[in-house]
Image (cartoon, rainbow, N blue to C red; front, side):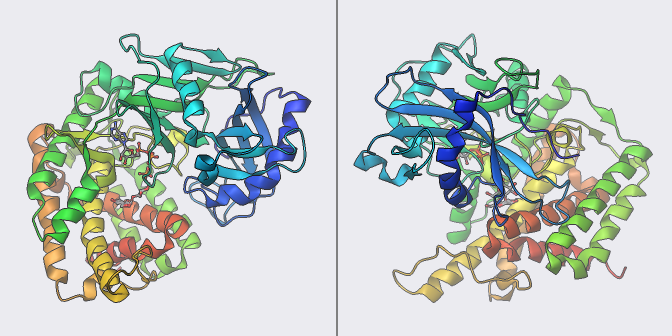
Length: 508
Ligand SMILES: Nc1ncnc2c1ncn2[C@@H]1O[C@H](COP(=O)(O)OP(=O)(O)O)[C@@H](O)[C@H]1O
Ligand SMILES: O=P(O)(O)O[C@H]1O[C@H](CO)[C@@H](O[C@H]2O[C@H](CO)[C@@H](O)[C@H](O)[C@H]2O)[C@H](O)[C@H]1O
């Protein structure tokens, strides 16, 4: 079954005709957006799920909130399930003539349909329109099927100056007055979204490692639609940790200065342990029996098989990688110290921020965006997150030497926008004279992280090597697919791990 996306309600005909104006422009514009998940597949059509005017009639400019389903042929053997359409959240500004400062936000000039003659642009970049969202959150507005909410303890100030977060991300974020950050989810799915669900649960449990949601907005499936559908989370606002530094950047800085990162890794392990302890307290846990292990092993094997269809370079390693999953399925559950519980689901260095106080925060509980929501919300052994972080230390240690080599090759003033010419088959980081230093750096981080985790969680992930190896392998396979779709120049990074994990499996 394809994943449920927000279904079209009774969108009036006049509104549906908006697509006559927008469709030709979106066809060009969408594939250029980092957050567009359907890159590399042709767009065969659009379907309007909802269109909501956020400004009153007669305003000199327009702000249309859109949920649009984008029809595309499914990728061949796409794991985990073929999807032929995704629903995206768009905020479209409408102007007669676009002011110069908004030029980079241009989507295009409508030539047909009801907006013919108007200039359409990405409204997040327009401070006046960003303010409309803030006001809606402040006033708990209900506009059409959109429901804006804020936490009852939170008094959101008015007129906070907005700016768009420049970072590469899977969604889009607005920062208001350096006090709050509003993440607008781009690919919208129906149902309880862990990106709001888990931080709310953690906040209620008193977990200090995760910023508590201050406000959010939803598309209420039952409001203004022809038939009841489920609610979809569209945006989540949390306090902005001003001056916080990303663990990914900190790790690369340490590598560049040839400094160890073990103290930081240890702190990150403790923070992960605290988040897991809180989730384990607040939400149900499931004992891992033979049947559960078999299901996990089957799912990992299926994902590997699907991934090998998509990325042919994986095929030669698949038989050996599969042994990690076979061993998982054959584990004696009595020997395992872990239960399954809710976890972060896509933990890596980019999801951890060091506050000015030195404390670590964990963000982005959306899980792996390509997986169906129901799967992302299943209880999992917490080792899954641990494996994600262990992979991330390896990523950092392989990324820095690649970047440095590129800078060197580009010469003074050269660009390093391309992360390397590495194809799936190469491992440039392994070839350099310093490769053992980088490998040790990652190994030390991994050990320090697990030690920090064990101090808080009471269980050392290294005590269950079969479980850990299975999850690391599963993650590396996911990363190969992720990179081949989103950042093909990075594929050699997870491919190096695939090679290492396959070699460690010995003869099949
Ligand atoms: N509460 C916060 N305080 C400061 N920066 C944040 C906060 N939340 C997110 N960020 C910044 O926004 C970036 C993207 O956030 P994230 O939730 O990971 O979005 P996405 O799912 O789009 O990747 C992070 O890498 C971080 O730099
Ligand atoms: O956008 P998200 O942060 O939700 O996660 C996706 O993108 C990540 C990259 O931005 C990707 O992470 C991979 O690259 C990181 C370095 O950029 C590295 O630290 C991670 O270990 C590696 O998995 C993530 O997998 C993907 O889901």
